[in-house]
Image 1 (cartoon, rainbow, N blue to C red):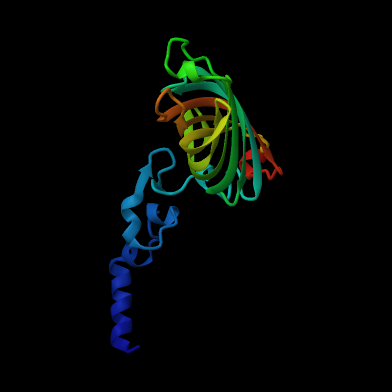
Image 2: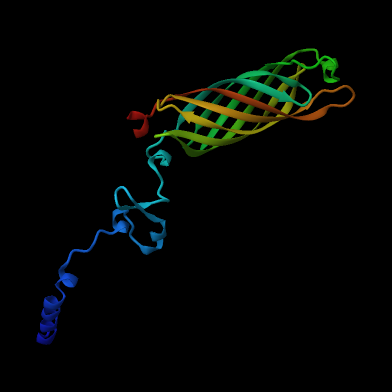
Length: 239
């Protein structure tokens, strides 16, 4: 460095010491771990800590590294509820579902449900019934999405999921093809082996009728308990 440049720096240091040697102020972006300016719009100032917070950061309750781990886990669900059918009418239903989770988002399952027909005796469908027991079985593909619900000071871990499947329904002593589409919500309890869920399923099937059969779209609303194994506790469930 030349003597002129050295003397210039010394003069600036004497005239403006706070500019050259003062410590830089705390930066909200640095405290939030931001490396580039492209994401600075995601940062807001937390009035309590006076630090920058990334409002689009994934919270731990939604991060698969910390939340319930479904990969390679079996889920057995025992459920019961209401069955609403076009021809069948309204009745109760009970059943079970078993799902094997390939990962945290995709599962393969089977479903079985049983119901007693409580059809109005004056309906045309009732005139052809010879057996009031109804059975339904199907195979399912389940797609799951992580979610959370804040309740006061607590955050409840949950999943939203959708399912589609094919199977058969035994109605009036005859097995008929059946399609299934549905979804639901699962609530985790904080125990790695226990959860609760609410399902809404739609069955599409052939229904015997006097003269000509019909294609019905029935709705099944159920709630139940799920047992999860093998247990693989996450940090959230080990606390």
